Length: 491
Ligand SMILES: Nc1ncnc2c1ncn2[C@@H]1O[C@H](COP(=O)(O)OP(=O)(O)O)[C@@H](O)[C@H]1O
Ligand SMILES: [Mg+2]
Image 1 (cartoon, rainbow, N blue to C red):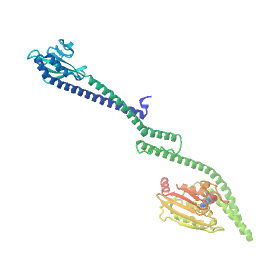
Image 2 (tube, rainbow, N blue to C red):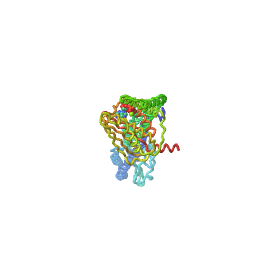
Image 3 (cartoon, helix red, strand yellow):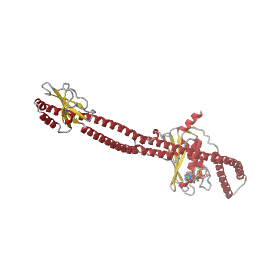
Image 4 (cartoon, protein in one colour):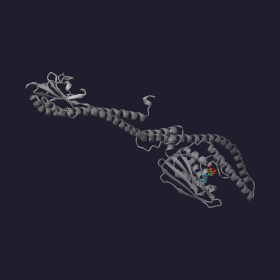
């Protein structure tokens, strides 16, 4: 596994942790260094002040040769740490007096001190940071070996205390850094888990489900940050995908329906054709009989009934043929309200409007007077509206209210045909547009399929709502622009 394959969380946590450790490490080291040199300087300064203060009495005692007094003075000077010892060193490096008596009369150990004439009269500090386990505050003293003689008074200081403190500081810094890093890693890890890993997982799971073909999957991230926006984009994509799948399924359904339709249609057309000829023969024969033979009223009525049945067969055959033929539209500018008027005029002459044994069917027109101009096949549309109106009238054998309304809204016009009839049970609602579906003893089941075909040929759609026992409304929706656009393409 290469570094690039690590999770984002691991990468971020490790990088941030590395950066934190470097920053804290450098900061700790630098501040310890600074503190160390300050500590050395301070210690040296204090020692120097103590030595300088002791110089007067020491010189005084030396002038009088009171070595015991000198020792006493110097012992007092070294009583408190970090002072460790004293030396009085001659100009040639010989130790004259020392807290370590063994050194007296020998060369001073260690690197040579600056000569007594080289040291400023206020004294100086030698050694110090990195200069071994001790450092020294030195001042020149006079009165050694005669009036002009000089020596160096050295106060030896242990730096162990400082170095110990530094070590403790380093250990503390290290522990603190580790603790901070740990806390930082936990906080960062938790935050990343919540802010990145969890929503990412949600995204991945959703996408996995969607790509496994589950419909209607949404990521559903409600957050507004980058990941939330990503989720929203994915949701929009999924939505479009669903929509496309739905359309494809509908298309497929329509295609297979059309395929079935075409097959049945071809057969129906053939049958209809076969029936049409003998039908015409029977009709003319009947007319001949009615003219040539004297008949009783009862016989005439019988003949009339036969004629009615023949008319029905003829109508069915006509419907069948028009359904089987491809819908070739003669599109022209038309006034839809006018088209509906035509359909209603034809409806008035039909037996279904007689109200039969019951009451009559009242017709109400509720037209939108400002329908936009549109194009379409007026004859076909009139037939479609008529079919709906005939069904409506037939659904109200006891009489009732038939309302035909038109309306328009952005780019579409609507025709609503409502009745107060028997209604359509819910399980039949999506079957009624299929050919040969009829609940009427003499029905053909071809009226609504024809409506659907004509409307579809105009680029529109027809839908139905119904309430059993209360009534039914069919909605035809037609695009205003579709026909015009189609003509332009053809031209
Ligand atoms: N307005 C309506 N009210 C109640 N039922 C209806 C209505 N319109 C259509 N239907 C139902 O839909 C069926 C199919 O109608 P249609 O295709 O016109 O064939 P048909 O009228 O020959 O039966 C009808 O038999 C009827 O059951
Ligand atoms: Mg019908």
